[in-house]
Each structure stands twice: as structure tokens, then as C-alpha cells.
Image (cartoon, rainbow, N blue to C red; front, side, top):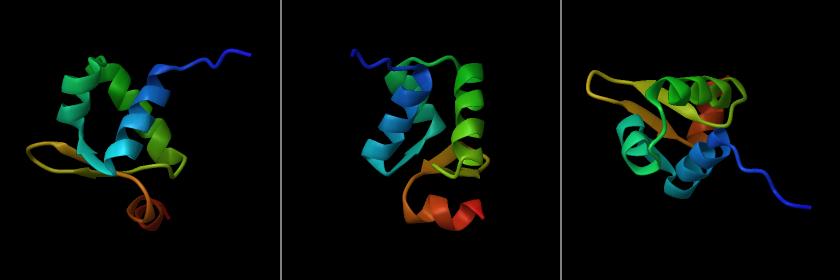
Length: 72
């Protein structure tokens, strides 16, 4: 059976590989539409897969213990 990869899978894999990244970096590296990326990030955050921290200059994304600790 062939595996189906979606945009959200690619974004999650990218964050997972990096451990920590920014929204700008994802937009630059994956060529994802900004509005779609925002939707993906909401879903990933609501399911406690990533932590999202908003700052004036960028949105910071992380995975692992930090995501678990900030999700509850």
C-alpha cells in the first residue's frame, strides 16, 4: 500500500526534524501557503504535537517535551 503524504505531514516532519524552527523558515523551505500553514499549526497545536510561541518578529515552533509541557 502506498503512503499518502499531505501538507500537514510535511510541516510536522519538518518541525520534528529540526526540533525548533520558525514559521518564516517553514514558509521559505517548504513553499507552503501562509494561510494553509496557519491552519496546520492550529491543528498540530490543538493535538499537543507542537508548541507555538508568538513573538513580534516571528512565530516560534517546537516539538518534544516543550510541546507537551505548554499544551496542558
